[in-house]
Figure (cartoon, rainbow, N blue to C red):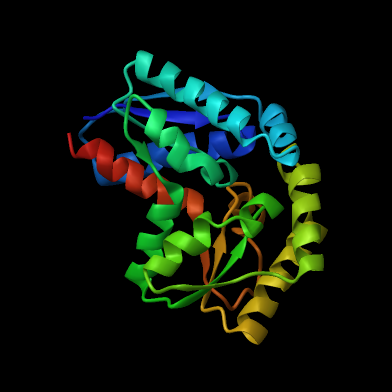
Length: 232
């Protein structure tokens, strides 16, 4: 079994969700294999957000490379970054990484394609919604991407940084973001909605009455990671 390294802490709640989900999926897929082999390095999400807000992407890259290096030194065969937003520098981190990295964006593309969706919406931080990494990767696969309106992006971003990353998951925020997802489905023709922030599934997994499929990037990433671990 391969050893998985997780760059976590960005944020803490979703890192816990990754760990629990990996255990559950691994047990379901390989009940006789024993516990999965993994190591986690927990980074400071506050530092990353500050650098992102200041446009200091070189600092973001260096910090992530340092984290991946720690995972490699601890014996990880490959690694993932347990958040969507840092994938804005994924290519730069991969180029400097001593071990292969498993992209959440590429795993999501594969999941979208496997489900036959051709037009999907994206929710996440403003950094993620306004960056090119999702539209570029999906676009090369012939998948169209639609985004919330600017004022909706502002609401999601503010709630994400102010509530979700600190671990506050409020019913009013759930309802507001679910309404945005439904509007994108109804008015923009989104066949599904990518939860492009790993705290969003924690908020929306139990949202009642959503008539549009939600693509949980944490679950997608975990499934791809367990597949690679079990390849041996």
